[in-house]
Image (cartoon, rainbow, N blue to C red; front, top):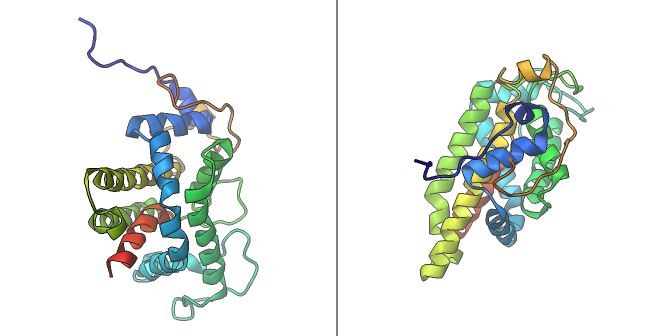
Length: 249
């Protein structure tokens, strides 16, 4: 008897050598498609005015634990200013923190405005890569994955509790469906970004990459079909979560 559900064939090697193929596979697996992208972009008017609030909240939380705060004693890519030498001197007003907050703010805007194409997938990959000591980046920052994953979990939990109460998404069946779709879309995107972090901590790909870092270029663009595939971000769930929190007050 034939299986009830069509089985999609996946090229295991391409998952580790082709960024777009990996993105499309994870997207297909979690059910992230064009309707989710549309829901994310529709949320942009709620998010844009809240970017500074979201950025401050993310860094407040990162500064509430010594192990995540001390990460910022390391010089980040592109920063050339003064670096504090100890946790007591490191504050939310330090030069590097302002520099990183600016980067996070731009990241948040990009998530809800960018075209979800090969260039965007390469950007998601870079966001994950810059948190690890891969050979093809200048800084030596390596954020242990436990902290990245914990922050993803904190934001996702807050998202689940707050987005459901957004006043703009209350009403009849149609509005209720839109609220559910928005929540699901940001949740899926959060885990897709998380995968672009995890791939640099796991050793699954070594057999395919010959112990070399994953390529930064996208080898082939494929569509949304059955035939294909602390930061921030971190920030993606915070985007919708803080929008909910702001309008709930």
